[in-house]
Length: 410
Image (cartoon, rainbow, N blue to C red; front, side, top):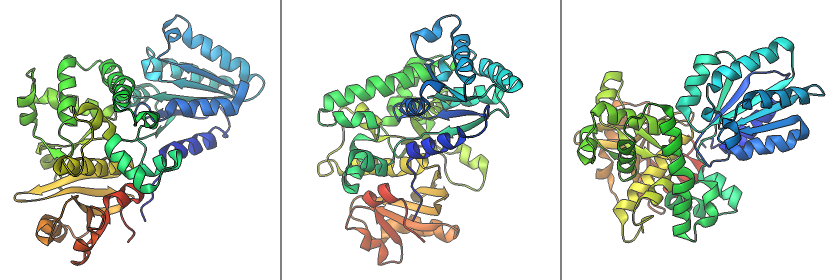
């Protein structure tokens, strides 16, 4: 059985273990999407350390006032005079020259043997990673708190596995949005106002690499309107209201990936140049973004089987990506398969089928595995449809079980 981890619980366990080490140890940088629990985790740590903890948020108004850094560190150093202290810096990427300043204070603490641990979070992988590489080389360890899997929803909200998987496909997995699901208008407002707008309007734009914000938003809208679909950059360019160079469109897709919103998958190939030249397959990393952006909300499986199929496939591929698997797709006209997984789960060639299918529909899967025998074929299908694949010696699993357990055991 594939290992499925609860990212929140794992990060909490890792951080608490590292905070037991002799201080000052390496700076802990925690990145991840908005609204998955980074602030909650810091506040839990603050509660455990009590008056030995200093919590400060980089997006608070006070952070813009002169002397913010100095006040935080002075407070932490005063507490460290009694016993080991911990400085918790939330949304650190909003602070000016955060990496350079953090380096200076941490180096000073090392020289003077001041027992202070530092944990910093950020919602922008690019800004946090870039800053840490430039100024904090050798001084930090990085963790990622990813989008929640269905199993975490089941545990946290006392849902059955089936309910959790269905909820993830329809409403995504942001824990803070669960309480609003019965009021769709309120739920949509929460996702747009608390997640989408801050991620695009603040995190991505703050990277300083977006000259045309309207074009960025259009690229995001196209991606959320084309989940689990292969879309050439030329086709995307043709759908944009504002014209933009292909390089700009590709750059904006990369920024959306760094903000944990969209993953443009490459085509599987042993040759890197061919992978880069192929059109991307767009996977939205949390299905909540699909429901919030689509005018009709989540699809009805009976009335909209095609749209529902794309959403199930998107949820399955996003789940694999969020579990740190390398995910690509494969297409050699007229054959293709939905995904290729490579990572701790093993090597899998994957086809997602939410409707009826026969062995002819699996020709691409069988051909890929013939050419690449290291990969095992897997059909992710509607519940009670597993036997169709199994009759032909192909492993299969329902999409509900897959979203809870991952691929079947060897």
